[in-house]
Length: 551
Image 1 (tube, rainbow, N blue to C red):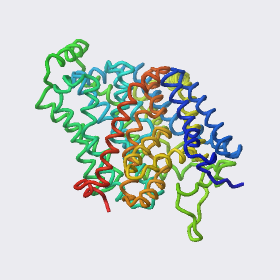
Image 2 (image 1 turned 90 degrees about the vertical axis):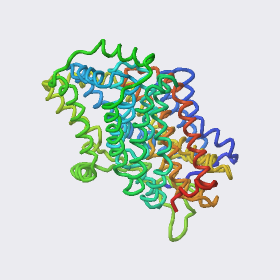
Image 3 (image 1 turned 180 degrees about the vertical axis):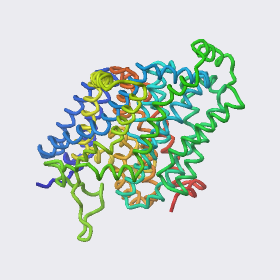
Image 4 (image 1 turned 30 degrees about the vertical axis):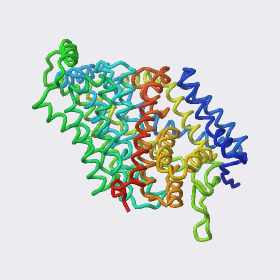
């Protein structure tokens, strides 16, 4: 059996586009406005995606079922696996008391919550994005912010906003590498092009996060720290992406950002006593004098986690673990059955025929980031003197805690995969691509939409990278510019992606309030996506911004 996607099965681009958008509208409407529980909303959105794929896009039933199962499996491994094991570690540190030591130490060295936001949500989160990605930074930093006294809603919102700047180069540059693979554009050219767009916004994000928390008045008291955090990340981001490549951008940038803030704090303390005094007094009132052993006890599990995740993600280590045991399972009824059509891919020729879409589930049980987290959690548990029976009991408790979140993520990924293999996602993309001279703006929003749909910058690049390149060539615009714009615009969609919101809600024990989180971050996401789109327009048409385009 072979099936080729049809991007206008109803013979009306407008009507087909509306139908393609129905699953997403149902999902976001149920979460954001009806305030339905996330797992029920995800199942409802999945049901709509199944109906649209079957009766509008005429996708064969075996393909629909297989795509949904494939997406659900991918949702559980690697994403759900990361969340489960990360919260397992977190619960052990809470029960042991080491998290309280970490919290008190952070409060003692950085009592002002505005700077805590910069250190934890922005700089610390960027390290985990660069080392692992896939929801890891959101889960870790949200959990830490909760322990520092932020409310669940605050921790979720600020973490989602902060986790934008590093996304394009996350997981050791995986989104850029994937984008190069589907566009045949040199990976170093794409890395450099994204590195000439994103740093402008990277420098803004720390100011924005603090302003959302404390208002403009509160921001004025800590603007040097926001500047140090932003430039400490943006400058290495530009230099490394342009002169080395995408692989170490986030790791180096996060370390430079953290170092810049800590060095600044040796010579400067926050101003604005009317705001900061209350924060400092509140923090100091809870502080106790910690011994070096208590400080070490607080930091040890998280240093261990960071070390294991970093080593686990290194290409030689990951490739070795894959070779040891990673079965690749072709998905029955889907693997090499579905083909994309023009203009999503180039017109087929005798020399270059259209290749059917692969659908291979890599059961990466050993090389997955979640497995590295589990190893770190077990080692940390032994370090904290938990017995194996106690660790097992905590693990079962954690599994019960996240059960609905796992259902939600599985259903959302199933929705995304059904949308992808049916061609509904490409229909939405083509609608944005048919915008003439405004294509650089709407092409950037296409990247934003791709991440909002799939939850992954990598997936969005794979989904729309070829379309961006082809459409840009037809419009006389640099394909490198628009492929990079898909990636840069996509990072702003990470705030409103349903999976990220569920991860944040789960990590903060705020499950059931995903709609409130979505409403709080949506306008921020759209605003930044619009800014990126305007910047890409300038790069496409207006001197001297055109000089920034990689040829």
